[in-house]
Image 1 (cartoon, helix red, strand yellow):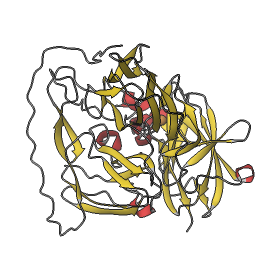
Image 2 (cartoon, rainbow, N blue to C red):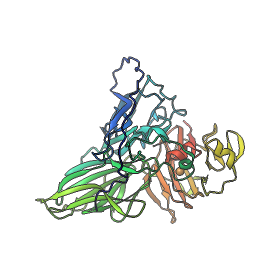
Image 3 (cartoon, rainbow, N blue to C red):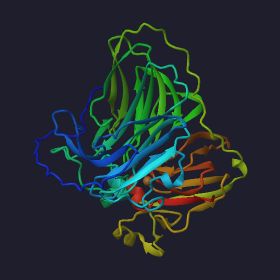
Image 4 (cartoon, protein in one colour):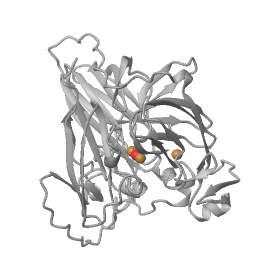
Length: 464
Ligand code: C2O
Ligand code: CU
């Protein structure tokens, strides 16, 4: 395995205009700030120019926010961008007013304005935060960061690494983000796929480790649309948690590890590569070859391998009782290129696929395009709900529910791991069950962000 730039090398023509930014309001604040603003990042290899990005604190990824389980997160988001923005705290079972969905749970924060986020963090694990206004553009420009919540007792580890992966579409000459967000081809196909995959905002990710070290690896897929297929080499271990939530029984981390946009995976791995060799997390490129995404140079270790780890302690409310008798709903995903959708309802009118396309809309849930006044379903607080997702399109989709995690209902009626985002390949049907324990208005959408912006967007209501 070796590094292999996806972007081709040609001559550079430099030259980017400096932008003038509006001044933020002078804030009388005691909350620590998190500022959304422009910045630069060396995304491509060192011989390419730096890329202009939008980031929290101007960085890509934004600062790592890290708290003990049960703590309160308090940040004043200051918007120094030229566009309105907001922050969604992805996977946090949060109070509804803090969920950060512009247009549903709060007004978008205008340029020069700010908004105070303050909420408790009930669950330990690996989460992330990202813009939730025009996210198909703002996340693609870099407005996201890791949110890590520590278990009360630290597990026995030699290192704890966050690897936030992103898929960028850069101009191969200038290394600048191509300004074609929401082009109709991307919207109606797989979404915005890029040509450079970064780890923590950089092309190169190299570490050192000693043989038999035990590493915690927190993988986060921040891509707009790229489903990542990863595998380990010189590392052996277990999947400990998915989307933040611990598995009751850790699963072997062998074979292909699939991570849809917005999904997370916590691994505990032991370094098994020989002294003087390398260990890798490899990423499978669309053409099928494996590229090193993270590399460890492995040195001699003094320790023997540890015994297998105990599971991580469960988070509160990981059970989904009564799923056999729960109310059932079906959400059929339709549309897109080669999807054969004839017509659908958009803003109260039935439109042909061609008329929808002229409005930049391509997808529907149960024949309805985009979010409507009425929720997809209304649940009683505490009620268990089942939703069958049927992907009748020609593309994969990652369905994300805000505010509550779900479990997949497997074919033998048992329940799978607790997650907040579920990948459905083309033609697949999968069912989830969850306890509607969190009152409020919660988005339910595809996390291929262009799909969400072009029809795959709905919401549910949980009564108080
Ligand atoms: Cu990660 Cu609706 O978002
Ligand atoms: Cu989708």
